[in-house]
Image 1 (cartoon, rainbow, N blue to C red):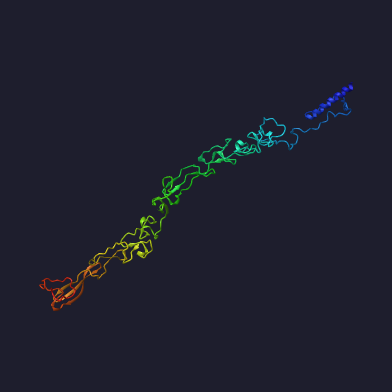
Image 2 (image 1 turned 90 degrees about the vertical axis):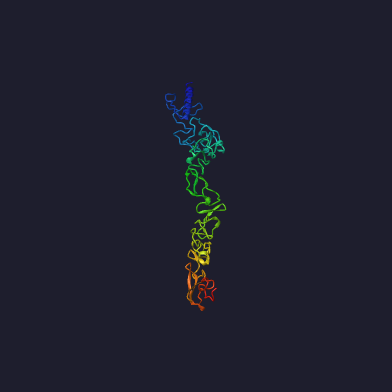
Length: 405
């Protein structure tokens, strides 16, 4: 009877030892118990039981600090979105896209936006649910441009050209687009246009340099250039208006339109059908090769024996004045010397008479001696007093008279 009790008690001790070894927490000593003298207890079936002090082999279990990490263990550096209060999931891990309460529940070890995600997905303007991305749950992708579901992008204001408060569709904050006004408005003065200050689209505010109005136009108002013209006033100074467009003015010597009064010439002077270096004012002056013999565009004296601008109206020959032509020196020509300019004349000195003529000399009509001769019959160039009508008549006599009237 006593031996059965010992055997039964030995079996109880052995069972406790096995349980203690399996728990890995403690060992059970059999000192002072029956069979404490060193004899192994004999089980009821006749086999010897394991010594109570023998350590039991550790079965597989949760990884401990003193056991190497198994490849199937979750990483020790748990993601930042892990829920420390969530219960440890026992059993299969959740696939990407499945709702989750913490990263430990997911096979990927990432729980973002309430679903198991393929990535940590912690960057700005990224999400892992269809309601934010338009993509399937469980995929970490950028949110669409123009949205900001998690309010991650502040609006820095248009004047900064930086963040506009929305995402850019590629995982960052969107910047104010190129062309957004960020400074002074456009301005125009005379024919110089300065465009408005605009954002570059890369986060900077660009102030453009002043430039001539396009198409050589002048300013239409304080903020814009003209786009068409009706006169030279609609063009920049170096241009004139031709059929609604501004074209460069012509150089000296080029053919010009007399009807435009020189506005098509750089010199603003159209003389003799060409752009001239000056107004070429004055008598017997011209600006074309045909009228001066000089290069077109140079103001010079008109050729002699011409009157290109009808400035030398002819005077009566008796005056010895203008003969109707230019002299080639920039003045109107006068009748040539020795040109007859009046009646013949005769002076009597006894029977000897002096015949004379009125001729031009240096522009004046003067008496010129022709000959001295003795008239036959005692008659001189002039009939004696009392002869004929009793009055000496000498006018228009160039030869000795044959009789007195």
